Image 1 (tube, rainbow, N blue to C red):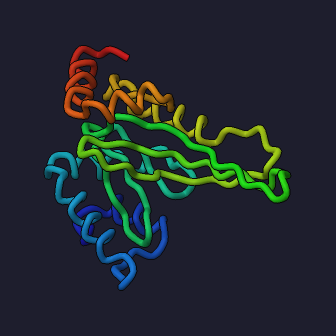
Image 2 (cartoon, helix red, strand yellow; image 1 turned 180 degrees about the horizontal axis):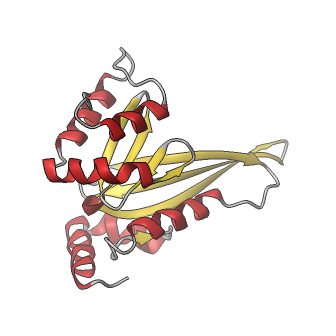
Amino acid sequence: MDFSGYPNISAAVAGFGKVKETAFNKKAYALAEQSWASLSPQEMTVLEQQIPYGVKIQKTCIVTPVAIVVYITKTVRVIPVRNVMWIYGNVVKQTTNFIPTAKYHTLYLLDRTGEITALCQVTTNGFSKKNPTGEAMEQIHGVIGQYRTGVIYGYSEDVENYFRNNFDAAIQAIDIKCANGQQ
């Protein structure tokens, strides 16, 4: 991934950590390169201007009005906001002898291709009342909410069934809501 013509994007990517292709992430690296190729030159220029002002979430994700940049397995992927369909959180509770020891909060994004991407993960202690995924969803909604109004935030079985039963119709309905400026 060469960002030499885009110093702000290059600086943001360097801020995530080491990005390189290894024997363990060849597929992820190829997907990351493919994701960057999906942006038009105009979108890259706008992202270059907006990335210094983007909202950084949990050191693994930067949200701008044009795209969401995610650091995954020593690669950096970009998800154009126009492809975002659903953002939801999940909490996995770890217990030892029925005593809560940890909670793993993960924020997921479903895109137009049906791919689910983990945007960030936070670990809290087993008794914590914190909801870091809820806070992260609010931050994302604050950035992209005015540009992509039809995105669904939060998890419910109804929403999961909505996407699972007829994915193409769900995409079309969200695109119509976005075009009409509805929530």
